[in-house]
Amino acid sequence: MDLPLTDPFARPISYLRVSVTDRCDFRCTYCMAENMTFLPKAELLTLEELDRMCSAFIRLGVEKLRITGGEPLVRREIMTFFRAMGRHLERGALKELTLTTNGSQLRRFARDLAECGVRRVNVSLDTLDAEKFGRITRWGRLAQVLDGIAAAQEAGLRVKINTVALKGENEAELFDLVDWCAQGDMDLTFIEVMPMGDIGGEDRLDQYWPLSDLRARLATRYTLTDLPERTGGPARYVRLEETGSKIGFITPLTHNFCESCNRVRLTCTGELYMCLGQEDMADLRAPLRGSDDDAALEAAIRAAIARKPKGHDFDYSRQQVAGQTLRHMSHTGG
Ligand code: SAM
Ligand code: SF4
Image (cartoon, rainbow, N blue to C red; front, side, top):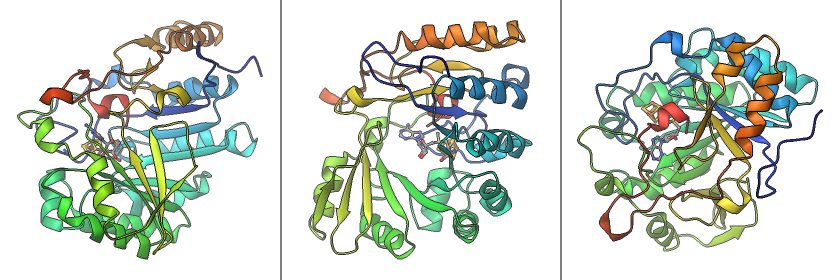
């Protein structure tokens, strides 16, 4: 391998998140507007291009790949891509291949994913109430997602639940969600709403439930022990002593994680975002399509990593949403 990727702040870049589509079968209120315009197909990287792109990153030292979207499992023939990445797992260059999904297609794909070498899957689920689930996701059905989670567990995949903390929506369900995950042997991570993309009429500040408040509420019922575990991302973990289960908190609005950031994000059109909360990006599709040889692509990747900023600028203070990005999470990949 060539010299592994390292940014100007001496952070090794070992984790790539890849959005394989901007499309989705849900329309979560904090993520998308109801009427979304999606990209023309020609803009998207083909499955072969995604393979070439990710293989280049792996050659440069990426060891962990998270596939996301939009909804990654609605991309046609996506198992072809998972199988292609599975070969990097087999030869040991890739340590982990995983995905973030809304769970709607897991019944169909869980077994195939396990066969490709996927061991863990993050499923986004904000409520256990079917009616509320319908309201938050607009187009989703809770029963289908719960069945998808069951399918994943039957296939031997470890499931982690991601829950966006939503003021007035799932506040009252905090303990139900925690207990349900503990019973199903699933870790649970809460996420603060991030100001990403136009969501059509919804107000970010109306949705924002600070995790400091959520955590304090948890502590009224459980004994929380901080865990030293760090993933290079914005998550912090605690163990609930009474259940033994692990709870994560993703607080992108505080800056306390940027110094250990080990990740970059590739959009479905081949743009590389060096920071989730900054607009600077590098177009990697042009060098990829410009030549069959990967030299220009690798040079473009290295040049982009050399521009990775120290941190992001999200801020909800003074009742304003600052540092807002224009692009949707479904474009960059959450
Ligand atoms: N469709 C898949 C899913 O929902 O898991 C993968 C893509 S989704 C964009 C990835 C994660 O981002 C989900 O857990 C979702 O809840 C979260 N997300 C989307 N928009 C968000 C926002 N504005 N703030 C915080 N989290 C967000
Ligand atoms: Fe789709 Fe995931 Fe966004 Fe919900 S959060 S609309 S499931 S991409």
